[in-house]
Image 1 (tube, one colour):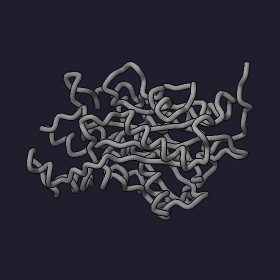
Image 2 (image 1 turned 90 degrees about the horizontal axis):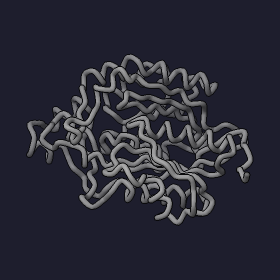
Image 3 (image 1 turned 90 degrees about the vertical axis):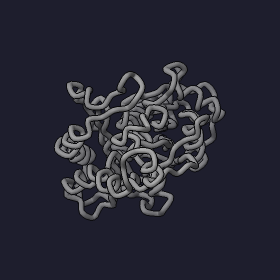
Length: 317
């Protein structure tokens, strides 16, 4: 049996992101549905979002984001031995996205699987990568969140079409002498799975008010527990990067953390809600803008359909 050596910790080496070229503004949506720029911004905080081309797939976007992360990491394709794609918007159940993405990146015979924990998917996948490296099941892991939500939207439903968008974010995880990815705190509320689902097996639907109450009242203790398990005090945080579900949700949870010095990710304003892609996409963009220097301590919090949630602390490479 040929396993990689166990490691005392794991770390993120690099991030990468991809957004489709088409920008859809609130004004454009207001020409086809009963809405307005003011209505959208006041309720969800979005000004614009990116929508993929008809022939652009989840795998296409995952390859683009992962290729950037791999290049930035300094590793070669043959250094990667596990690829995990977090997604809930694959058009087809079979084959999975991960094996296709790996082959297109020139990664030879890696472990490859998809994770569907909806908007919490990237946090789930990052935790699995952390455990795989520390346990000796992998040396270097490519973790990707990629979504094409536009394939699952009713473009006449203003409660959903104004919120969701497309994109991908990725991270490369490798062994570290210190645990730079903290323990995950995760869970689910399956008794409320009917709050976000596919209507008629075709269109994404959510009970907005129920989801809003759940996120703003029940999730900040999860974030605080992740800080505690990582041995990090709220005042030591550089940034808080939650799933970009809704600007009001992001800011409500942030206020309860007791970390007024932390930078709050507000990627949703120009990227929309990209489900499992939102956290790595926001992280990559924040690093690219110089907002998160090397060594920054970041708290992530993913939450969404299922209902599933996960939080963890990580250090920026």
